[in-house]
Image (cartoon, rainbow, N blue to C red; front, side):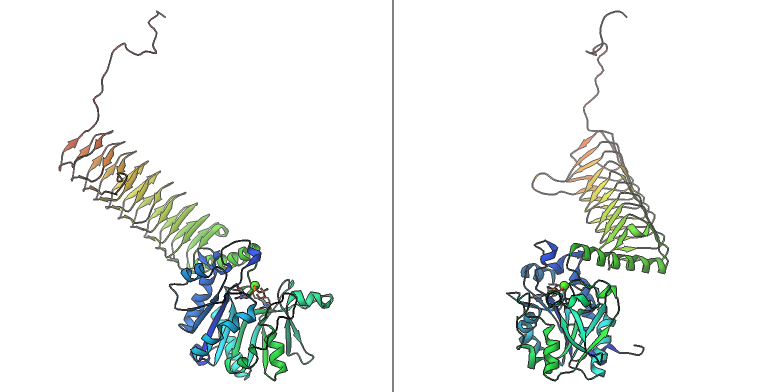
Length: 472
Ligand code: UD1
Ligand code: CA
């Protein structure tokens, strides 16, 4: 494939993803293609691959859970087609055909939506070979030790494919006594002008009473079309997902591949088998992660950042910081030399500037914390703008919600807040002021002042009701 240019073979080609099926064997109301692998629905992986080859010439046929699919695909530049009744994979192609014609393409690639890890190389190799051999239909086959529910590839004495027989029909025919290990992967390419002649000749005369796309192979040969099949061996990326077990097997495949890629690039990943990193995450060489850990979404982890075990990070930027065990960081920006956790929860909209810290049992939401400021124990900071070198005592709470609206708290540079303080927002604590422990602050605090808002201590000598008066 060296020197191969994708555009050579895909210029007048489009792609159709078959995603209308119910996914009965998943036992779930969610359309099968929306079941996640790591942090993305399985169809995301496929569309990500197809987008780079076919761009707007990408069609998806949906049916079961159509509206959910529509919502999930809104950010993709693909055409969604509705197969109202799911009468089989061949029927899906028939339903999509008017859209295919409108697209004015010479070649149509068809892929089962439940085979999400297919790579662009598989698609390009198939396109290239089919065009080189001047064939009308091409597909990729696999050789599996246990062919299970896959369609079996029957070849003639000349070694050329003759038909794909679905598992149920193969077994019903009694031919399973001579098991065939070569199966159909569900990745096809069709010359549109040729397949048009046979597409509407499909019948549902089979065990499942469905219109099979695979019947096009025998039908095409009968009508004088040229059919070629390329065997990809036991290629894990081409395996389909029909059951939860198969979903977990494919997820493990993609997980291990992502983790291994980062390790190769120089990221230290300890307990690698328990680290799950999403496909869009970026991690610089020199970062250190200890599993179990989950890092998802569009997260970026800088070099020398250390993430200890049991952390969950999503859509966050983390500079050269330390995230201690059991911390949860979502949609947050973490500066250099920041310390987080153990047991911290940073919710969306949190920014911690250089050298700041959010220690154990600290929750922060929609707040900015200036450089060097410390929130080390048992606090809730919400909708707050905090300056530099602030010290927040243990148990400090910003009371940001009055039952109707959220209000802002401003804490300026070098403020010292004593333990167990309640800051009733909206409130501003101005620079270099100090608040006595146990205060409930309801008014702004002026710069440099000491503010105490708590009831005075009374000492009543000899009044302890639990202490007896009897002489000992
Ligand atoms: C299919 C192939 C089989 C192949 C296997 C590879 C057929 C008849 N069989 O079997 O030869 O070995 O894939 O993984 O094609 N779909 C629709 N509309 C429908 C029915 C299905 O869009 O009316 C979609 C499904 O959502 C799925 C794909 O087509 O993504 C394949 O259907 P599925 O029922 O999973 O076929 P398999 O039995 O796996
Ligand atoms: Ca399948």
